[in-house]
Picture 1: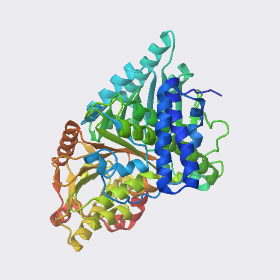
Picture 2: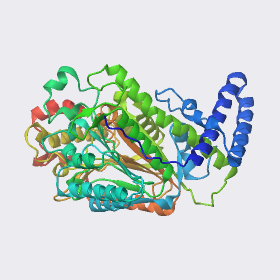
Picture 3: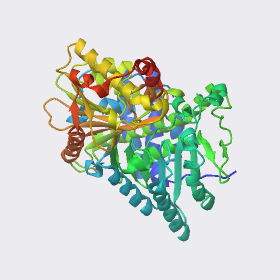
Picture 4: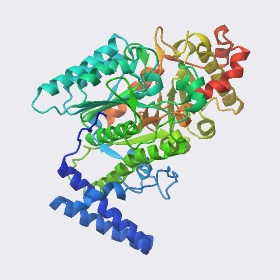
Length: 564
């Protein structure tokens, strides 16, 4: 069987220093907190942090190797509790401190806001990927639902081939390419994602990895009976991450021609943000390790020792996958807590205003028992106060019951943007799929009626995106605090805020919290650009002839809400 060695993304000396700082203070914390009161324990742990940071600067120690073992081992999601005291009681001053609570639950990466760029169009997204792939020297990591089979997708594959060939022609072929796709969507049809990548896999076997995630929920009789076109409704790999050396694009866009031309999505480029790139490289590698591995002869197999997703025991697979993925999340969480504590207390090597932005990765994989994104999002919506404004968008407006309750019950003003029927990705589809836009009309009307029944029309507004010959797939939110004319927080990535995103699929997004005025302006311009192409929904919207929903569509809408 082919072997795969992931590209090294830390220098050994840096690894050593970081893991010393991580491992030793964690050992102290567990010992001290088990013996002393919290007040006394706090003194001891602050002293230990300083001692180990001082030793870190002098050299290092092999205790570093214990880092993964000392990270929190419990894969279950932590309860996102409200801290006592003011939001800015600890950490940096200003806007970032308002959301600093997230660092208690997920890894928190400090980055310069000047390194973050909002991409605004499908073509910009596509051209940026091609250029970055061509110049990559160490790693290219691509995670998507699927890779399309058209000319634009072939050009993307050609860029990978060019980069791999250039690396192979050099004295040391260091470039590694790792692609993670969904098994069901990536295997559909005779010409598919797998056949697009097989030539690369056959030619650059030692440098190329293709992993195909298969949900553990599609198994047994269900797997035999559900048609190929609909088997992805059970659950998929939905993460969209595109990584080139130390830069990364987080998006909701797939690797398909429409997403490169006339399907509006959201995209953010984090340029030269090594720690964030390392995290997502590790995350994709972890999901890849629990996925089926594509072989040069187009067969698939699991890594040795890994439970099979649909032939093995369901609980055993989920437990093993959860442990592998949460190992990445928890290790990064502990590492960043210690690094950030060091920077907070000593401000070493950081000029004023340089690292003015926080990036929080949020992962949701309910079939594996991972609910981090769901809990953080619920807390954000819960905390949105009367003087805040939230702009929320989803290509498929289908809020979960919990999210809907928070939107309707919170004090913040909401502007919700969703696809009009003609820009819905299923508009004009054949068969049952063709009824999906009508089902979303019915869902939107139910939501709007509930807003009206509760008398919330002044606080909660629903908008529809319109654009001729385009489809709409953007998702995420922009968060404006009281008195601010620019957003200080955005969520961007693959989740749709709907049932599938929360309960069925593998999802990942990032929360970006920034005090950087230029980045805030970029986010504001992005939000305004999308909403400028929308119209606000009113009672008259649903009285239009093209908004009539047939009875049978209304009857199957609960099914569509759960599977599409």
